[in-house]
Amino acid sequence: MKRRFVLLLACLLAGIGLAIAQTPKEITGVVISEEDNQPVVGASVLVKGTTIGTTTNLDGKFTISNAP
Image 1 (cartoon, one colour):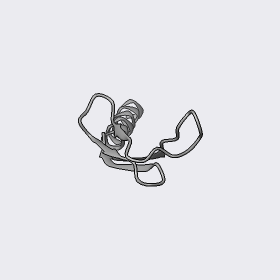
Image 2 (image 1 turned 180 degrees about the vertical axis):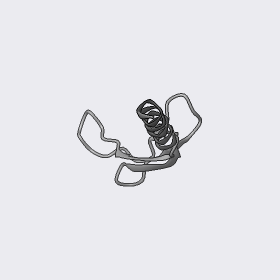
Image 3 (image 1 turned 135 degrees about the vertical axis):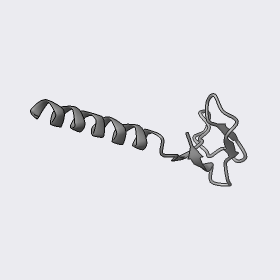
């Protein structure tokens, strides 16, 4: 009986971990020039290995929704 309970608990925790790992994320950040520490306007930002991306705004900020 104890063995079944431990096995059930392990499967439940593994399932929860897999479900959370599949939840889309939101990525935000700021692109700043290395030369003068000013925001970079219109810089392209891509999620590595995908075609998901965006460009920075006037403050150098970006947001990517539903990132894997």
